Image 1: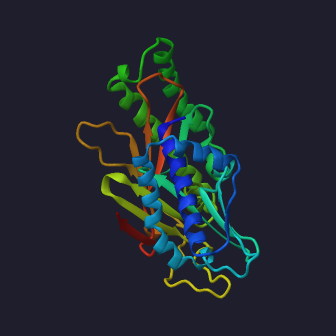
Image 2 (image 1 turned 90 degrees about the horizontal axis):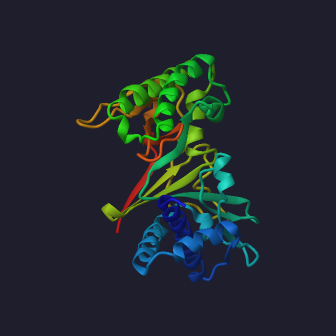
Image 3 (image 1 turned 90 degrees about the vertical axis):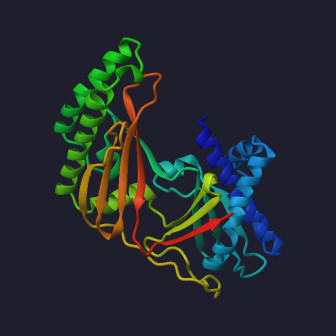
Length: 323
């Protein structure tokens, strides 16, 4: 499994452990669901040395004070039978559109929140473009047009020639940018704008695809800056609720999804680098980047497509916690 997946899962486990220990230290009831998702994450965490484990735990601990203040449900125990349940999400939940990794709930109080854990990585989605991957249907429930498939077909036929010859992406040289990256991104750009013109609510559906269908807190661990970032994506007002008469000490604003695409264009190209990114600006302060890339070996008939949230509404709750 990729290192990024292992470190991400280890961070998820550290968050669950830290919150469980913190709740229990307050003499409150809590339990961790020790299912397969938990065992996998714990296995990756246990595989790291003590220094790495310490960083995971310290990053999770840095969020405790903030989260206890803005989410009273974490500590608002109604009675001895009101148990805070902590569980790690299964991969299938992410595939179904729920980006939360660590989920906290109180069945008796009908309350639930979740964290999306990011370890040195703030990309929201990792998709692919290919001659079979219909991004329109996957993202919006709208199939891509025949024009789109006709446009990308010769691009992947060109890639297949290199693959069949046993060559690498690196051996393409400038052709990788000129005959693959740019024309593929342009085909994607035109198709997304076409879908947007003929269908309702595409901007809001795009945000739902990127950040999920449930409101959540994003916890980003950035080792290079000794920093942990907490963001509250409170779309629909599911966060920051009063639980068992306990109120939040701070207000987390509700945010609205975008309603229109303002611009979708190639990003400024850094000197001596390939043109591999489109930037989308939407109303309400939302901004998204779409970056296409490939590994040098081996060539496969699809390209990775990283989708990252560059901008969000200015009222979105964000806190930077330096360690």
